[in-house]
Length: 299
Image (tube, rainbow, N blue to C red; front, side, top):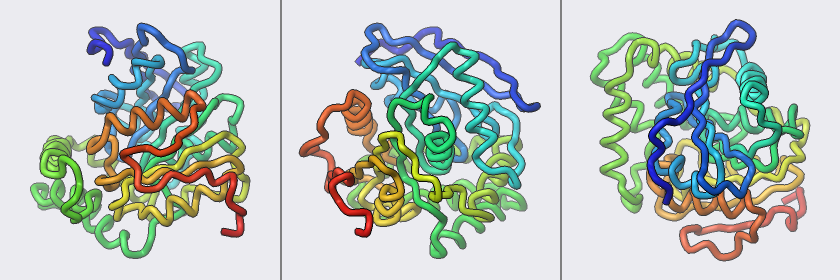
């Protein structure tokens, strides 16, 4: 694994009145197109840890704070994914990058899906993790409860409620206690700006279907999630994969919605194989590996 980057390049961007940021780290021996990492609703550009480090073995890595994320400006809840998509395109223009491999997870997956629809020429390949067409009814009460605590308190209950919404109660999840502790610290340290973004982003998820599959993306796309994911259940993630013309589905063993924290080395291996256009074959960390191009859409 490459050395920890000492001086990743952080750059400020402006588009349509929004200020947002990129963190770009150069690989010592890049062999793939640059990799962009877009995360969930409270994800920051500095939060990628072992995933960012692992991907540097094969590619330059760009971790953005798009409008609505991290240090960027808040994105009003009435706006959909088109604003962060166009902001990401402008960011790539600013950095002089024509085409990237994109990973987008959880809340951020709608940005990846939309970019594949509107700017397929800017994407080589796409990985979407923990995604689905719409929030299922059974997940909504817990998400609304977390928003209510973020808005009205008590503040000390917000972190545990948000963690419970993200994590499965299943006991067979790798590093479950450690991941819970990390998330609890992250939510516990959230400031007022973080909470405002969490509220806006969650209201956006609850108020509309952020993914419109009426225009099938043509970019080769891998869909993945943990086998125990209760927030974006595997069956719904797999069903969305059938809306793409060229798609694969991989289910990660002993993980839930937070595969980037629970199984980072395995996620890096999966992304590296897929971005390099290698055959996925039998992955020792996967319970399901499917090339959906061979399955009729009616399935």
